[in-house]
Length: 437
Image (cartoon, rainbow, N blue to C red; front, side, top):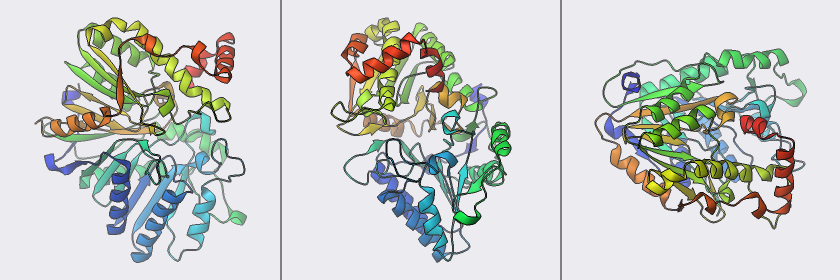
């Protein structure tokens, strides 16, 4: 039971909510500049753009100022070695890493983690900026849009937790299961002498990662935080906690997800929660706020069909639960703010337990990617008001869905989208795609 789940004791005043991407960037740069002993960063990618270079320069400056500083950046191996989707000729972020580190007197470690042998089969989706005794946790990666470098931003969640034990536990897990693994390699090696991981070592990495866990001094009483890591369908503790949060909730759930495509076991738990007379608020991104959305006036590519597929999944769920929408038990909030995108994840149950995570509530995250999260137990109610304020901040740019028919059908979509989705239905590939999206 979640009541008995052990965690790391956390003082009520040890958590801060940053709320905006610009606040995340300012906090991260300040922490890097003031670092004393270590900086560990885990993210899907550190981009070769203005914001990415600014963060990388800050890491290099911190290392130059204090050569004994332990600096490790871990990103997905495959993502680092390819260009952006739709951008031809881009040779990958690792070229920037190599150039910067080879020119430095005191280089930092930038490591690529090949969770699976191919990117579409699974990626490093582990999150956390761990600086000395603090953890900045967000689903954001490092680039212009995530850090709101220019006009456009990608909205996420941002929390700072002051806890030496949590920071130590997260560093130790990274060191033990990633840094020390034979399949994990440096992305700053010289081109002429570069050694890439052996294919067999990469193939077997998922087996080794499936046993990864955070080790910490545990208590099952009082306000605490439980760090959790998960990979694969079997024995995935993070997935189990999500289902338990839903099934054990006594009153209400507040759920954030960029798009709606829940695994069957989660969809079933949500439906039962509603049938039992309890409330659910779901904040999901409008299709135009999806990472892969392509405006009709731009050249279309196949990847641009994804937001429409997710939207149809949401419409199907809303239609099935229309009775709950009408009764006020189910409140679906669509997030949209101009040209900006939505990337929030997490669940709050009964205002008492809060999962902050970078994991999507979809089959891909639950089966293929290496994910983690922090479960906060608010036994004394010290964080309730702050989480409620965060929720109101999230809801600022949302519109509530009152009927499933407000969501467009295939007939309303642009011609290229209709063509692709019709072909998918004709080939009966919907079931397969749902398992990898």
